[in-house]
Length: 193
View (cartoon, helix red, strand yellow):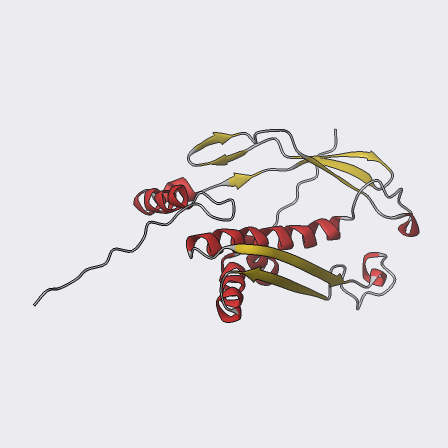
């Protein structure tokens, strides 16, 4: 009797993800878990009125200080209808963007690891907020979002069930989704100069 064995084809780079390097990284982190401990930073400065700018000077990760390949910053402001100058998106919009970007990045990685070619991923993330809370006009209304809805439309070379599983796996592994749904301790220090 002849036994035939078939080898799985090697996973290849896909959707802009270097899958062989990603798999190798998983192996290294599995052997040395401290490599996975990161600290991200954001440094903000007030510019005028409700306008501020936040820069991202670098981060600690892979057991060393790291720098982004270029400098990044985000301007935040309130729209004119909320007494701002509309020089940037609102902070709560940044939060929605963070959720969208985190889950979308996960979709790209997970689809690539599973060797599913993506054609498109489109997101819509909305949050409902009642400003009576933040304005101090109604103590029964919370300051933040009362609810957030996210829709991820995904097209790729797999059936609908597989594509939906990719989205669900990304949600299950999303750091931003975790922070929003499980909370995280936040400490704030005020230092007057």
